[in-house]
Each structure stands twice: as structure tokens, then as C-alpha cells.
Image 1 (tube, one colour):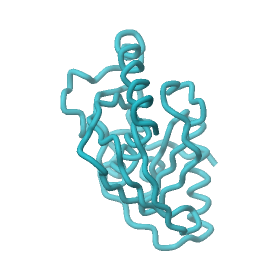
Image 2 (image 1 turned 60 degrees about the vertical axis):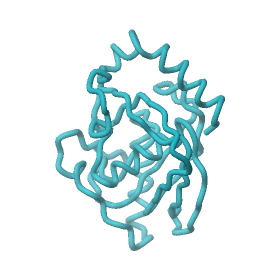
Image 3 (image 1 turned 135 degrees about the vertical axis):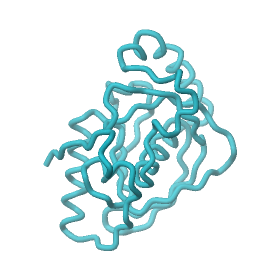
Length: 187
């Protein structure tokens, strides 16, 4: 079932989410709804508080996404009670947007090598390394669970732009940087 996406300004987006303690039918329905909502909106990820639930869950998936053609494909990943650990100090400026902040983008400095520890939808633990743009996506979604939006991470407000202006003036340069980053570190 599609759920409405909570927009910027709603208090739930700026509050930390609670840990998941039960892997019951209700949780499974929420995860399914999050996947359906993310796919319908053309997103690369979505956090539970973006659909009105203050639980530590996000989902990520990139499959030849026309909204983000420069992003490497990422299989559907459900992250329950996720933790992220930087693997080195290297960062990259990534131009980000958000389903909860429609039509606005900005440059965010993100770690490019991280270790993600998460539970899947059945409560099994997984630990994996994520790199490049994919690492940025995982950090963006985890930020949501801590009540942080990409707007809070933009260090230079002059990088804010609408999608139209991004496409017109900034996309080519960003795609070049993104492709070089992906070629260098993978995803």
C-alpha cells in the first residue's frame, strides 16, 4: 500500500526514531508499504519516519532509476536498527535531494567508505561495506532515523538548487564527478 510521504516541516522528520523490537506482521506490512512508496515516488531510499512511523528502518534500492541515472544499481536492501561506521576519513561532495523535500537539491559532504551493520526484515544481522554514491545514500537514510535532513548537512547554502536548475546548470558537472567516484571506489 502506498503511504503519503511526510514533507519537510513535519515534526516527525526532526525526531530520532525508536529501535525496532518486534519482527511481527505489522512490521512486515510497514516494510512492504515503504518499498511500494519508495518505488512509486522514484526514490533511491526511504526511511520509516518519511511515511509517518518513528521506527529505525530504511529501505534502499536503485534499479536503473531514471531520476538518478548516474547512481549504481543497488539491490533492495532493508535496514532495521542500522549502524554505520566510517572506514576512513575520505569524503566526497554529493548532490542530494529528498522525497520529503521535493524539488530541492544541495551538496552534502559524505564519507565514501562505510561499514553498515543492519538487521534484515527477518531480524538476521548483516554487515557489509558500501562505497561511493551508495555509501552516501545509506548515510542519507540513516540521518533520517536520527531526525537529520540533508538540508541540515549542506555546508554551503549556495549549492541549493531546484531540480530544473540542477538539470540545466549543474547535472553535467555532478554526473562527471559521480562517474569518476564510482569508477575509483565502486559502490
